Length: 460
Image 1 (cartoon, rainbow, N blue to C red):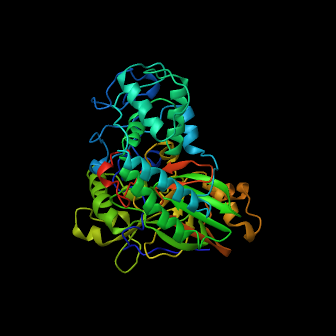
Image 2 (cartoon, rainbow, N blue to C red; image 1 turned 90 degrees about the horizontal axis):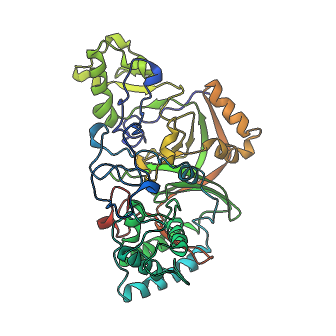
């Protein structure tokens, strides 16, 4: 069946990072993934395990966790494209999250109320100390370790016996506990993301809990027994059935300048090997400038990126007839054909909504092994999407993981209706409690919950 084309005029329809469009330019398709990211390879990434005991995070170059310092972008248009984490164990933790408890579980409402009471008490007592920005790790000693311990005691992450002023095993486990609660890889060592999360003020954490409670109270009334939820601050997708998380997927969601919207809808259709219709914002900012750059070298951008162009009447254009230096080039519409580096990957999850956003695959799997995954233009890229599709199409018959992957191999364009549309929620829950007594926080990346003044490159 023929793919339906989205309205090209919708600003969020791309849902891909526009900033890095056309960076890896080459006339050969192997080099011409339309939205290839700068991976940072060969640029001397750091590693938290190798950080010096008292190395300050604010020094120049890369941070100890391997991320770029603020303002250290090399990406097109000055946007930030952080490298994937160099630690294999961290990459595994990031790309294959544990199932855990559903974010939108009704049981989280009383647990979040209890968390609010706890944090109200912490705020009344003056909050917590600021942890120095030093790359502490097991074995470190000194005043900064003592301050870290004080901070961890206040939120209950550190309890029991611990050696004063020493980063001992108890402190290491307490840091891991804190990191897990905040969606940070539990290395037990301090990196910039962990320090930033530790130093979010207590009153801001309280505001996150209070705002998120209202959303939980609203959303849990409408989820039903089987649904999909994207928790935007967590950059994760959950498939939930009968109160249990069936699968959890690492995601990439909208950057602050192009946020993923909050919405409720129903998944109605799965599109295999879709076209990608380029929105006008990217046509203006990236596509036409790249067309001009390649034309100057005598190269055919449309061929390199497996694209088609259409005039204002919808008629296909010969690439040789396009004058990239004419204003008319901005008036054409462009679409990318299905291929191995199509910006939408090989499958798209469709649901009606006014923002023209959707969930989709991506050829750039390395983006899922980054700690910071707020990089899209509104849509949601889903890791291991091939395991989510059979669950969605369970009532369509015969859609196993193998069959889904076979569709990727064939490149055949097929749209499959979902017989029983599945509720989908794009939710903004930056803080919540769970019945096991754990209080979870994620970066208030869009500043909806009072944490905008504390946001950094890492989102904290």
